[in-house]
Amino acid sequence: MKIDTTSIPNSPGVYFFKGRNGQVLYIGKASNLKNRLNSYKKNDSPRIEKMVELAEKIKWQETDSEIEALILESQLIKKQRPKFNIMLRDDKQYFYIGFSNEEFPQIYITHQPQNPKFKNKKLFDFLGPFTDGTALKISLRLLRKIFPYCNCKQKHNNYCLNYHIGNCLGICCIKNPESKIKDLDFRKKEYIKNIKAIRDVLSGKKDSVIKKFKKEVQELSKNEKFEEAEILQNKVHKLEKVFENSQIVLNSKYLSGTRINQNHKKVLNEAKKSLGLSSTPFRIEGYDIANIQGEYAVGAMIVFKNGRPDKTQYKKFKIKKVSGANDIAMLKEILERRFKHNDWAYPELIIVDGGKAQFQIAKTIISNSQFFISNKVQDAENKIFKPTIIALTKNKKHKGIKIYINEQKNSTHLTKLPPAVKNLILTVNAEAHRFAINYYRKLHRKSMSNL
Image (cartoon, rainbow, N blue to C red; front, side, top):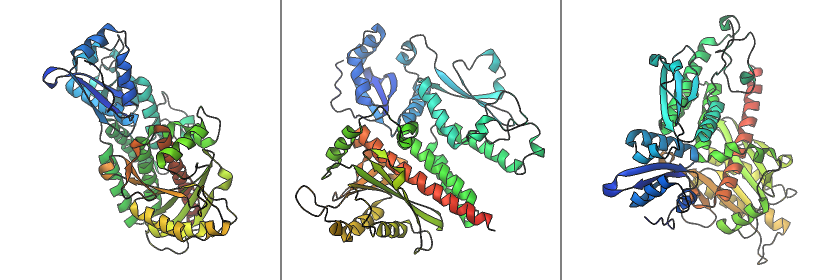
């Protein structure tokens, strides 16, 4: 068949080569569907040429990240067992994840579940097959940051390195934990809960995990267990971010401000074009709120200059006028306070976390602000300059992110933007959340220490 990629999106997803009567010949995943399917036009492998020749149509299913595509591909291959997925392995083995049945279960990646060391099948539960070992290892690394677990091969007298960097709960590999750890039973339950969460996520049950955790956050808050609620809520947010765009987490150098292989000017110009901005967004401000049911409520402003974070200009706001859980009113308060500072530089782009309500309140604050009038900032048409506002909102059932942009009546799906622009927006949003959460934690811990 002749491969036509005209209508295929530049987003992550899973694709299907189908033969007669809709028979699935091959299932694959891609970080960019169009690029991946274009690669089949120039391939000198006889087996791939044979598969393309037998195919009569190509179908695809978009996902929000390559991690989600990896998991979906695994589920579909296991369920449908397409003929060419076996033939086109190039003698390589698929990858499987094994979970041991121990007091503190460990997680293994292996090519061969039937390996003699796993001969006692009752001890292991396997997920797979996964086609991309690198993507699988990165996914597991990201999940471990959210749900720590142990991979030590022997017990030690002191905490392991993974405990100190947040990858281990510090109970599974330490000798005589009963005599050293006061909250041992709680941590044991937390450990098992982490393993189950990872297994459920890699089994394609991410939405049910998030839904369950959010329900637990509400219950903990009702019972005034705010610290536990905050920890769990932060896990939910991190998990959502991983599946919104895995590059946000992988691109840690972007947030550290070090040099990266990216042309910032090109990205900013691309943002200007794709977002319809009146000027290049050399200064971007991101805003977020952090609180648990209104307790210890704070706001944060982060700044990106020339496409990179400028931490010297980050600002913290302790919410003063709002009581109760009202994120919209809190956003209104911090924006009003921010734009009373005529001595602060003006932004070309403002990004807020939230839906249409947050978007509307931000527009109202900016429209009524004397900040730009007093600074006499003018755009290319000599009109008083006002920044573009973007609000990020979750789609129903966590099926992606949509954004509201300035005067547009309807929201736009984030995947329609160029990948570099999408990544920039999500990076600003994630950094604003990180900064807000850290400030919230500081206030909460200070309050707890004074009890």
